[in-house]
Image (cartoon, rainbow, N blue to C red; front, side, top):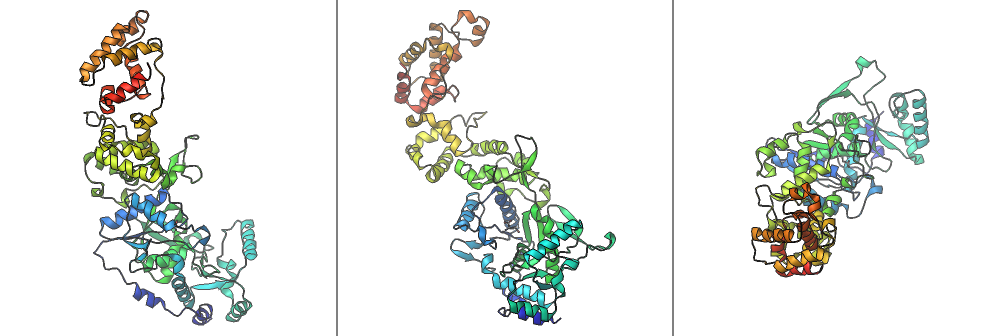
Length: 551
Ligand code: GLU
């Protein structure tokens, strides 16, 4: 068989040579050790935590080493394409502090290694497929869907591995004349890799391949034997082929991707070998898992069942990006928490991220842990920063909250309550929760969330009237509390809760019940930060108004 002829026959329109592309995309001029990484999302419009998790690894590896991190749009599966998806990807990642140096942007490509959208790279893939055909390393396969089904059934019946390999790769043996005849008839065909692997050999003669995965260490597996499709009948590449061609030509040094690609790694290794290219360093990340509340077992996060898989979830609720970053690092690198304890105030980028400290089993995702971390992260922000963050979130997601931001001083004081004590309050978790938490400071959002204590039911108007009459906004905290005690005593309640507990028949209740009644009148809640402090922020007028409403 004259393979060169065959290649010309199949790809007459491809006039460029692989050498020309090699020359057009030379090795990058980067300092020794600089890493080149990429994110290759499919533009489905759904950007998830797994993307962010991977992107984080890519970003850290590139930027810690003075390298380059680029965005490539993997849209060979055009059925799933969603308009505006590129914008969603770029914006969502940028929000979480992940910025690309190169690649697809909203204004088109940026960088010298494009095109960065796979659907625009057809001729490049075809050129390299043509090269493989010309060297006898790939061939046209005319098997129809029915024939492939029949092969699969036969393999199932014989308990053999499914696929096109060995004796099932019948198109390997076609003569030039047969191929010409089929082409003349217009029979569709795919291009398959002509694999060297042979699994029918005795176990100890099957070639094995070793790959050093930067996360998993040495991987050892039997060489591929499948004649994998590299170009579909439409001329569009499969993921396998596009990955190899793109990561080579774009001079990627580290391929960070999910563990779901591990089973096809043997195919990629053979493709790199056949093309005569050096393998990039693979980093197969762990699957994101969660504890299933019903079964108590770990399971993969699923798009259908777990809204927290979508990055929109965190943006809509208003998680601070610094909290999400901080949390992701705790699940990405096992030594991060230790580092954070030793360096509580250090910038997160000072942490030396390494692939060796990544887990290889499932990475357990836990919203409660994220919330705990978020509390600590938000505690480090100033009241002004909290205000700006909350406003930015509301502007985007809750424009109806605009009035919260009219009085900066007022809201800053609210957000700062109890945060400067020796044991500071950690009330803030995410924007939506913060707004709910502080809603009682705003008359239009005030709601009676809790009831008055039953112990005060009969005396309520009297207690509140006495409170209002004695109220002096200028009282300091102890002066204010002294008045509560007086009211407590006068109304027949115990000033010390333990007296009430000892002799419940002698009192109507205790000081806690009285102050809770005042709290509920002021805030609609039984639990809140210090009442005196809240009144100071509410101001005299609003304080009096709220109490008066219950008289
Ligand atoms: N487009 C692939 C995906 O969405 C990217 C895999 C890779 O990073 O190589 O999973």
